[in-house]
Image (cartoon, rainbow, N blue to C red; front, side, top):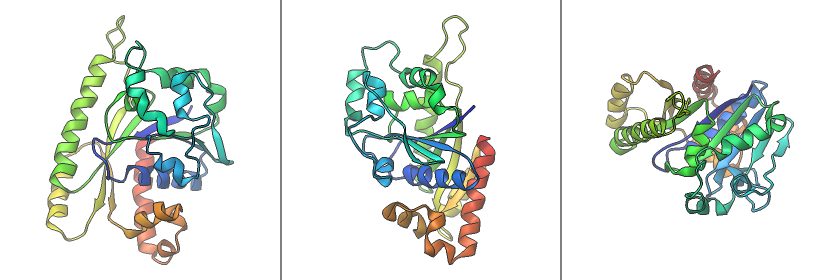
Length: 259
């Protein structure tokens, strides 16, 4: 049975897409098969694989069209985003099952997804209907945190509150149990060395029980998305064994947390 992990955040620019892209590469290197789902209408993850399109996309899951998995290589598949995804918030408001349409699609396509070990989902930085659909199908939600007052304290508080409201609202009326089973994990991202904010951030994150890994600020992550190349394949990473070791260790910690 696949494990589904959604990468989500209350604000943009925290490295969510970069993390999804490179964690997928890490999993493939460990021998796993990965399905990516891009639910951000900006389509950055899809563009990284040159698959941002209007044809057979995630949009079709919600509109009765024909969504297709694009098999990018033997270990990697993708359901790409569509620029029309931003229209769904208004389109789906009248549907009683609006937060569970992705769940139903996956249930109806078990044969197509059964061979994937992990499903990784990138989301738009908000907590709307589309993101709720992705969280509803997830085993884990990974939330990147940054070492700044807004990026850490306020973002975490906002996400925790919205997640609680979603859990409380989405209940089975017969059992009163929440239909949202995803466990929330936090990952400290873009942590800089020897700065006041990072030292303070380090003290605060020590108090978070569900913090799973720390990724330091490194130029190779920016190069990775710009060059559309996993960080592990970049020459600048290969030339620095210490950097490669630290990145591998962080992703290994994340993997151990979602097995």
